[in-house]
Image (tube, rainbow, N blue to C red; front, side, top):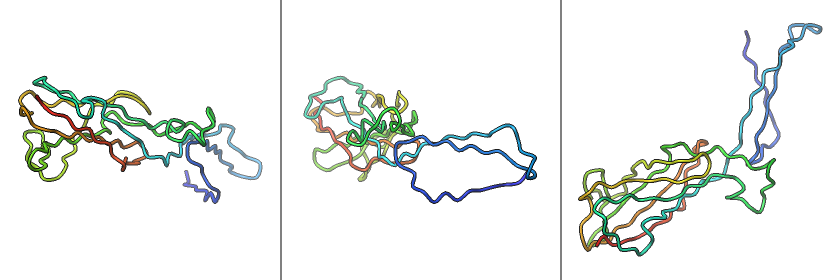
Length: 178
């Protein structure tokens, strides 16, 4: 068996699924009857995520808080002006562990949740649980006792798709634990 390659010089456009087919030829007249097929998606679009709970400016009183939100990587949802479904509506999708969340206490100084305490001067990204393929919901639970009464907190989320496009424009919600 030999290794082969083909240097494609054309442009591969974002949001499409491409198919590569190959078969071998031993001589000018001896050709493999079976065709090998491989498909891939070109995904150059950065996914997005939003914190939907707690709402921005909300007062929260539950002892254990589960932060929830949405994440989106569908080509047509993120690029509606150039979408041409169903032919140009492909995305790499988001893995179950590819949404991360950072939570900060911002009363006097900004200290970020490390998994055990608000003790870091820079964001510590914790893995949320994502449910979906290219679009869906995520959740992240803070343990009971993590939040202190009458303090202000900031929640930030970010998503990375299976093509390793990392969200760079982040959304933030601020809430008060009461």
